[in-house]
Length: 285
Ligand SMILES: NC(=O)c1ccc[n+]([C@@H]2O[C@H](COP(=O)([O-])OP(=O)(O)OC[C@H]3O[C@@H](n4cnc5c(N)ncnc54)[C@H](OP(=O)(O)O)[C@@H]3O)[C@@H](O)[C@H]2O)c1
Image (tube, rainbow, N blue to C red; front, side, top):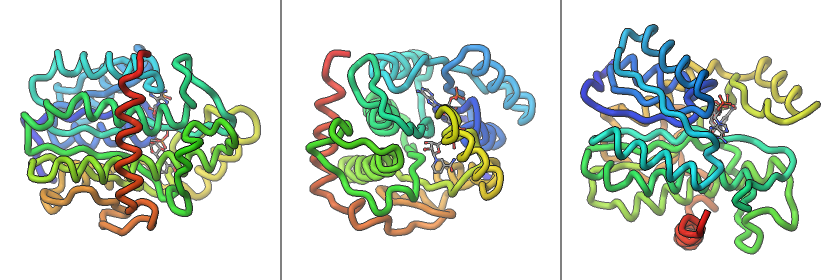
């Protein structure tokens, strides 16, 4: 296990599921680990438990109320910038599945806001710090659900047709496109950005959905899901393994770079989406 001592790693959605174990894996490698959660008690508890289990005193909680809100993402970025003069690893893990369309108080469809715009905004806000701290790595937690999807730029928010699974798959395609575009922009800088599919994981994924959907997902995860501690090691691999030092703009499954869907390699769409997100990020919250 390589040591990350002296390196600062930020993990969003680290209070449960995959993110908890990613934070644990980074803390076990001695990184100063920032556990980002959305409820004070659970975030403090998660950081405390990870610190105790890994015997790493440098595990810190940071609370943000809802990453689907741009105002909160900006607040989180400012907080991190104020507290940490160096940031070497950013794991954008927080994400969710919303069976029914929901719109945030800022007027954005929730799947897009949480799974796409939040990681984009957090990453771009922290980018100068990641560059100053380089070599550094950005890891996006993506999904094989991006396969078979395409982007409808005329209906990015699912105003006209919303289906939960399609919105989720599209959001992960969009995340992959943004990562590839960002990697292009970072060409020549020792800052990498990659997307990891953790497999189907026995986490708490989808439990926010009422009734049968949440129950069905819980059952499937119980029956077929990978253990989150194992899946998390694939994310930690992308965040830390020396073999990936120069790998950027890639999509990984089971610690291996794979192509991803044809749509995920459409760099015209990637540029268009990046510019759209830049525009959305600038709108008043
Ligand atoms: N599970 C799978 O099979 C699977 C497969 C492929 C990809 N993924 C991806 O893996 C990532 C982690 O998911 P998971 O499976 O670990 O699910 P999970 O157990 O539901 O964990 C999601 C994490 O994100 C946080 N979160 C959710 N909504 C948030 C919001 N609005 N603001 C701030 N934090 C929020 C949750 O906080 P709370 O603890 O407060 O709920 C939790 O810590 C997601 O990006 C997901 O899309 C999962």
